[in-house]
Length: 174
Image (cartoon, rainbow, N blue to C red; front, side, top):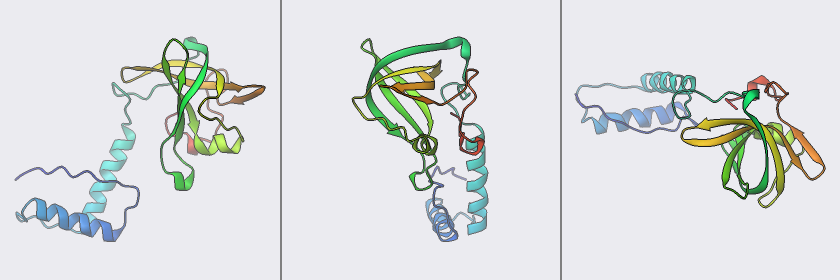
């Protein structure tokens, strides 16, 4: 029996799509006696999805945690603001690339919904100061932001121990 890898997006899963995926899998395996239905595919996708969500990895198998002992303050210019996740529900995270003059640094901010609720907007080219915990994400150094200063405005993302200020349902590993 051949193993077939089929990348799937779980974002908009429906019974119709499960049926199409089941048909596709049967076609790719040549039918070889495999009978798949929408329920089987849905169960497999949910099992894989939950397993993948439970083992979110950045680099070596762990999600970086805020560590107050590694806290630094850096200043620079926002080179690029990036947002991830599902825009439709406002979930997902926002991070930015900060040009510090001596290099580029990834800064993880937090959930987009929380940032928009704080009415704090950043744009490419903004000169900011970030205080946060220095971490490694893969092979890249990054900062989990605790506080961002833009001109006379301060956005507090975490308390001094690093506990996020947004509701726990929206945390998503930031």
